[in-house]
Image (cartoon, rainbow, N blue to C red; front, side):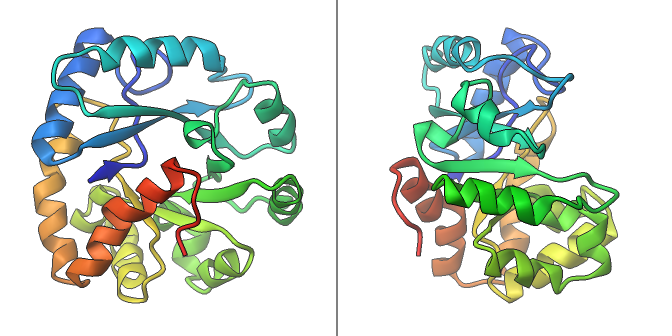
Length: 235
């Protein structure tokens, strides 16, 4: 499996607090069955703004950990009107240097300029992956908005923890429906702490495997992410 969404780098955002915790997270990820991890530290203007080269150095240091899963650089970018500039200036990172971007929206309210930003990024040939749509209040109130996202070319990444209620009943309900309707493109742990999310992956996989086929499970946990890392289309 490939963990498409994680906060494993030490002292970068609200994820891993130090190098020791980061190494523990790598061990937990391997034990949970992940062969690769995409490091998607938060990038948010005036909050989390660690440049790409510093995060790349930290990732390189972690990769030297014995028996570590393969590590790839990315960002989870909080949506902003100047995303193009942020990417061009290598403040935030695409997924493994490809044209794929992981971004997030406000949890509790809609973002009025979303369509404009999507069109600008698509015009620059970027391909957008929306992080944990099941957690957004707007989606929980109107499931059909996910189909609008799909029509606009967005890929949808859901969190493993959602299916076991880690983010509440509404997120669990939404992700279950997304899985049934094959709206999920990628899965990620969104891990922030050791002794937490990675330990729950077996339970989450058990729940998901009761909803979807083995082929679709492999697609959203492994092959789609593998194609993205290699800068290939997933459909």
